[in-house]
Length: 209
Image 1 (cartoon, rainbow, N blue to C red):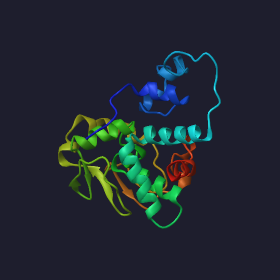
Image 2 (image 1 turned 60 degrees about the horizontal axis):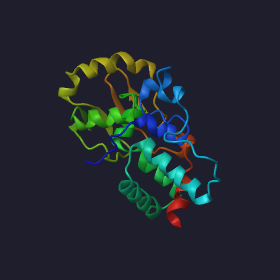
Image 3 (image 1 turned 120 degrees about the horizontal axis):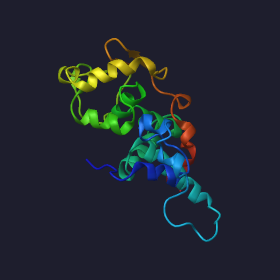
Image 4 (image 1 turned 90 degrees about the vertical axis):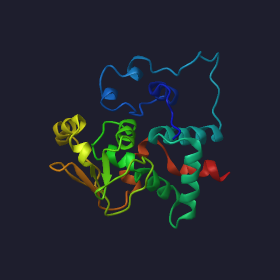
């Protein structure tokens, strides 16, 4: 399965803001963005004005990098968002938020989406009591995410048990800290997504041209 394997801190520097791609490290002085906030590569001789198309491209890239989605898959999400009834921008946010790896991250079962993707691929995450190792799998209302039997015997499970109390989940996820399970209690809304990092309507305009 294709994924980005390069330095993630370089992505934050490229977009000029923290995207919190490394979890807890991003909140410490060790964060590379704190030490080198300038964009990677040689400095341009002069600043150039960014066109409207360029601004739309930046928004799209920011959203894609945040959720760890490559371009081909992101285009499929856009096509599905405009196909569904309702506001296309909100549909796009819901499609991104209900990915299995994102739900694991948002519930506090992982420190970052990349870590969530990794533990899902390792086969220690279950959905409705059955192992599911596809990070891009979409969840629906009523689905329950937890750990498999092998996952509950792992060292990672013990670590999550100690750290889960200090984390909080969005209102559309019902977290059970005692059993380390999370239930999708409703559809995510735009206000509950991480839309402060990107403007979903600008992304729809980018692909609509």
